[in-house]
Image 1 (tube, one colour):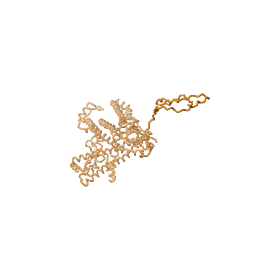
Image 2 (cartoon, one colour; image 1 turned 180 degrees about the vertical axis):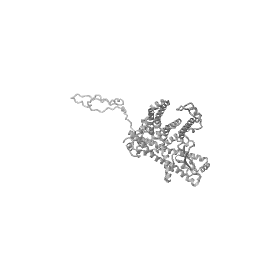
Image 3 (cartoon, one colour; image 1 turned 60 degrees about the vertical axis):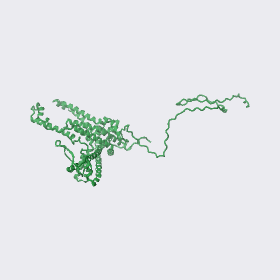
Image 4 (cartoon, helix red, strand yellow; image 1 turned 90 degrees about the vertical axis):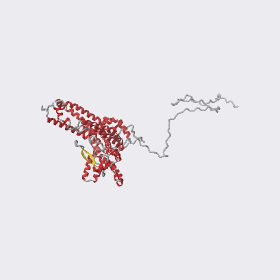
Length: 586
């Protein structure tokens, strides 16, 4: 019988089929992955909120000194226009108005990201992600045609993007960084946001992809502690893989900025720098474009390190992620399309299941109060429930604390629309809240803690599924490009493959175990005891003539041979001459 784990032909002989993506649901629904994903979401959101508070500033004031004609006249008073004429008061007002409009547009970009209710400042339990799945299903099943169209449209615009939220939140700062109309302060803020995102998910996504890689390849059990040690040992590689293209892009940007300084020189800049030297600018832009497009393969960087282990490093992960995208782009797009649509379906199921769990539990426990003491119905305990996915709207329904959501302007200056909840009946809500005791508020706070933890685990499924799907797609792309088997995964020395335990033998049956044996030990022969009374030996027959030559040396022994013991000498009889009779006896 062969030792160790028997090979799994269902894994090793399987072709690189997109059907492998359908294995992601069960693997992603691992409580360990959900917990790690929830911790990553919480850490990322807190760091983004902190940076947003630090970098946000108020809207520019048109009455500020830098927008007044007196300030503009000091800057342009001695300058001339290209036609040789001087600047007038109308020119000063036009310049001030243009400067204010530019600063206002740049502030609006920062406000949409870092302002109150901004995309990077909102905590995850307040972020709008479409209607509640339970209400969505009930509206589709029991609503009118208009209700169904509104519900389906809200789900497609809110819930489906949740699945690719990890990729969106990674590429959003990059897209804003290279967008026009962004101030240098906002660019620096976005760069720090990007660094925080990479630092958090290099660790959390590394753990998730390591767990998924070992499980998908059926390489034996792996604990959360083992996966964490694996990532900690290689954290610099996880961190460096997405940073290297960003560093290259930054180097190209700095080089082109210095090159553009020469373009400020009149005549020389127009003719030489931007005229004859335009190919230099195009080459720099091409290098940046290659790496920016290659960032679409960003999820493959972490999966490469998790699957290859010591056989890979930062540059190998970067090289594979970019090469796989460019060598087989249609397969890569197809795999992700399948993962997104399948993930949207299973994510809807998970969101519906979690929402139904909380709602049915609240409904059942409230039946007692509905018949005994209506003022103690538990809806008041959900006034601090998470607003995302419409949980607060679902859990306070049909009570004085019921809320409804709507889009409205954040403020008159920015005119940015945010989705907020307000009481459906403000007067009934105010009256009910005025009757709150301190223990009511404390109870609602404790309920909020547990609901938020459950909400993060639910939201973490989309992140867990995303990184699990990225692991499967990496296996498929590796099979397509490098012709490697799907079950090839590096196993660390601390993660040995555990062979299956032998079947237990019933007590009293089978062959009893043999006792432990050791090497034979050769001992010297014991000396014979000396006789107390010598006894004369009987007469011996004539001794035949034998060869008395010394015997051959004995085989090599670990000890010297003991000396031979002399036997008692026999009494020799006198020899008789030939032909004579022996003398008579007596």
